[in-house]
Image (cartoon, rainbow, N blue to C red; front, side, top):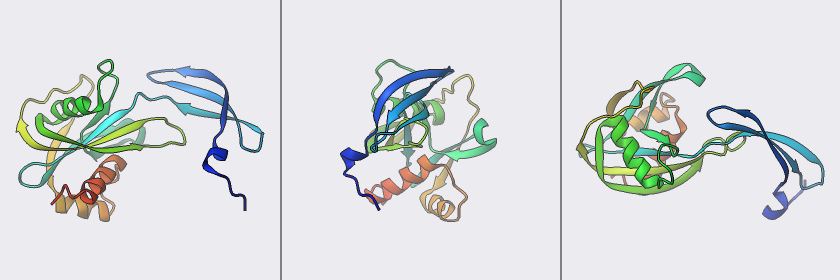
Length: 186
């Protein structure tokens, strides 16, 4: 079995070509592998995003239900969105904006919980996770192509749905687990 140091595992980018220019570009990169061979790899370039685990005073978590075309089903997710609406927008501001747009609530406290890579084999998206509390009612302001039902689910029910496989959206599962690890769901 081979053993490489982390720096030896890095591939060297030799060339990059945009092979499809849609909403996000699809890149074809040529890399040199640690053993000297070359390989081509495709990946989708994404502007990054935010996801918010928002908890009200009753310990309920805000979830949004929406249809997701790629998997052809309605999903139950925490509020989330991309970092491409406002130039140079900081993730914490985008998190507040997305929370308000999708749920109609503002948060007096937005706690960063780090970031994750949603699917690093094919996508370079960085997803910043936040915990929101101190919620106050505002107005929902959905994008023109968003059709969302918002609901509050008690934290114990969220945990049950994650355990039994009813909740399958990774960002919500990870944000819930991070909030538990950080002691934010007490």
